[in-house]
Length: 173
Figure 1 (tube, rainbow, N blue to C red):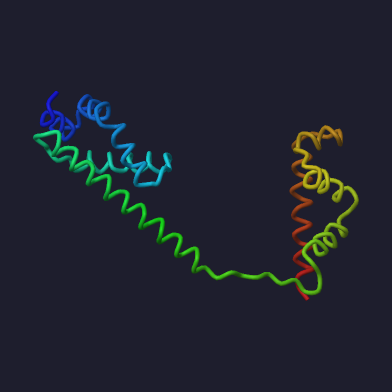
Figure 2 (figure 1 turned 135 degrees about the vertical axis):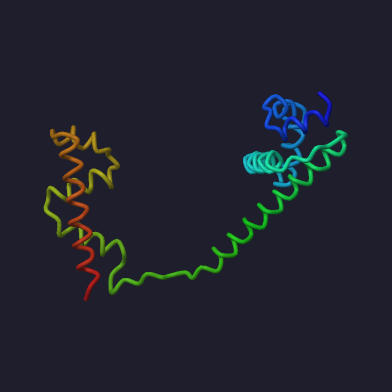
C-alpha cells in the first residue's frame, strides 16, 4: 500500500491501514519516544500511544514517506513536550506544598500509640498485635482464635474504631 493510500485509509478509519502503519513505523516511533524520555520505555510507550491517538484524530494525507515521517515525528515531539511540561508543573506544585509538622503534646508518637493500645481490653490488644505487630492475615487470626473470618474482621473493625476514639481523646486536652 502506498503512503497516500495508507494515510487516506487511516483518515477513513480503516483498521488495515492503521495496522500497516504500525507494522512499518511503530518500532521507529518507540525508539524516537524513548529518546525523548531518556530511556524510560514505559513513558515512551505512553507517548507513542498519545501520539497515535492524535494522529488518528487529525490524520494528514501525506503523499510521500518522508512527509509522513516528518509529520508523525512532529506529532510525537509535541506529545513529548506536553508530557514534559505537565511533569514539570506537577513537580513544581508538589515542591510548593507546605510541609506540615505534627506536634504531639508531651509524648512521642510511639508512646501515644502504646498508651492508646494499653487502654484496650486484653482481647482487643491481642487482635491488634496479631494483625499489625505479627502481620497475620484475617484468615490466620481467625484460625488461631478458632472463630470465623467474618467474626474476626468484625472484631478488628470494632477494635480499630475503639482505638481511633481513644487516640482522639488522648489528642484533645
